[in-house]
Length: 530
Ligand code: GLN
Image (cartoon, rainbow, N blue to C red; front, side):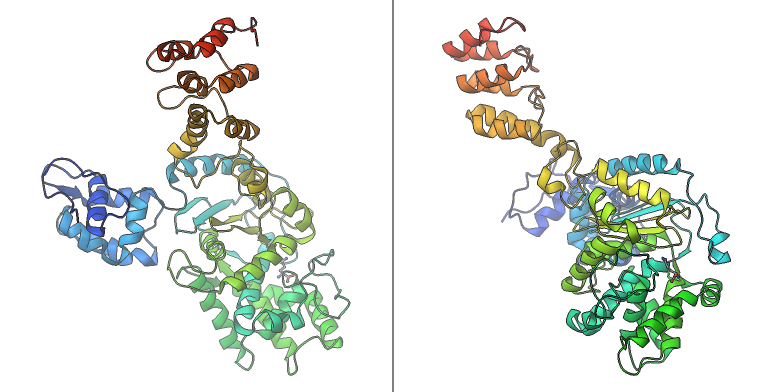
């Protein structure tokens, strides 16, 4: 067993896969650049952690942050470091080793900020006006928050201002109903087809059931299924507590004025309730008025974009809240919820959204949109001006930009669009992968592999770290077929590497006559013999 170096021993040991935890601890400690006394400054360690996107309010890290902040010494040695990271060892090591979901978080933040600023320029759309509380909101508000499946968080703009969840509560209510009763039971009462109608339209499916749980009738029905037999107060408290837990213990509130206004202008929701009762759609013993009040209370729950980003991230993370590490939903619940968010989450725009954005999402009339990139992140945008479908104009604009910039559309993995960035890769991976693959394939003479990379749109002229291109490698190894193929494609025949050599220099040095011949006759563009 190799152990890490002792204090002041000089150089970091090379780590290898399978190293024991002490060696890994040591390597992580060394990455924090200990000083000559083999100590690391506490402020710089905190800064490094925060840079990775982990937050001070992350429940998993409470003890670590407290211990670091309480540390009498402003610097800690290796032994204290090992003790402090204690139970969070895995998370902290992954963070400091750049192995969280989005390894290059600072660049991601910069890029998302640019997307946000472009969406901010949108000023079209109208505020919801059916209740004064929504009509009075400052229309200029715009907040975006993102939380990765590892709990890295970023938010910008008005991400800390509370809004009423409105329809964004629907996927949560549905998921809670699924947890309590299972999908079979829940879908005895609620369908799972897009309705093709407005979210509050007076219509039921051919079985007399609400079409799906993402429209008003379906959410009212899901409320009827939740915690039956409990007092209304307890049922509502259950929903509030659940949302808090799903959001990693963050603050979730309730707007009584929104609720009172909703209650006063709830004719349509009451009509939906009576329509369902007429069709005997509710389970036996349902107190209709109470359930409608319960539904309207759920619409009036208040949270910020940051809180809702964590909720969305819990869905992205198959039901485990990333910032508490605690399971909130079974994976099957999340799968069902995301499926219906994908097909029914964006009102009458759901089909178009699935086509262009390709993410499970849910929109609310207060101007919020929660979106999920499975296994990667959850996000929430909030800006109150709505388009003709009732979706936030800026929120929708941001969703579109997000999937244009990153390979997040559900089917991007099919098309392999190389111009889209994969933020799951480190900066080095992003840059090196293509260049590395193409140069390795060229050095093996793997023409088929190179053709595949070309089909993916990989830049054949991009060199590796030493500016050695595919042509250099193919020429140096004497792979005539590859050299010919590259030249035929029109790559620069005389790129110069970091050592000042061209492919012809390489072929000459290695004595590959046919390659020299080919490169010599075709070395000037426009005079190709091939
Ligand atoms: N409270 C609203 C209603 O039930 C919520 C609807 C929404 O966000 N689309 O009408």
